[in-house]
Length: 202
Image (cartoon, rainbow, N blue to C red; front, side):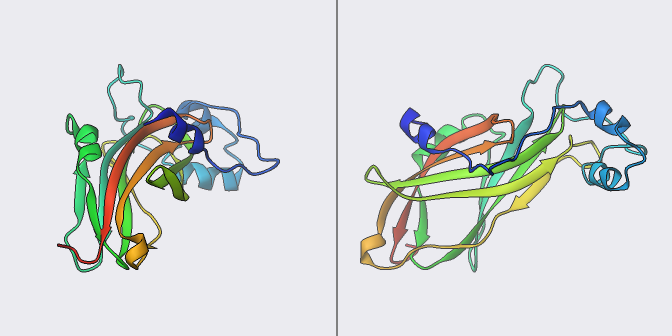
């Protein structure tokens, strides 16, 4: 991703919000067992007594979040699936623009794996430019997640529905810059891609 676009693609902040101290999965599991609300939170992340298996991911793989698949869901059309665990997938994504019909409603779905530790405040950021000028930016909060296990090997998150703009002025080519970040400001993946808004799907 171009550095200037990377500088523009920053998460929103909430005044007064402080990120909690980072803890290991074992530390979370042993934390305040008598606290009912905390117990529910840990259970939602798959942490605590009764959880089986271990975290997925090779010990030598430093990644904490692995984006496995992106999927464009368009009503009435076949899903467009990009498997990112295939070598060269991001390079291919940057070279082949999507076609979106004006006025079409669509959603994006992401499949991902969390490994080694709890991830807090995972979010997806997107910046869209046309002819070098920013035309849109968005942020999708994905949530907090515990490490995946053999019983639950991945998570999926479907984003809010969007509608492509309509009219001659909006038709044309766009460049998008995207990244996945967390509350600790770690960037887990960043990439660029492009799309064309056309009068028809052809």
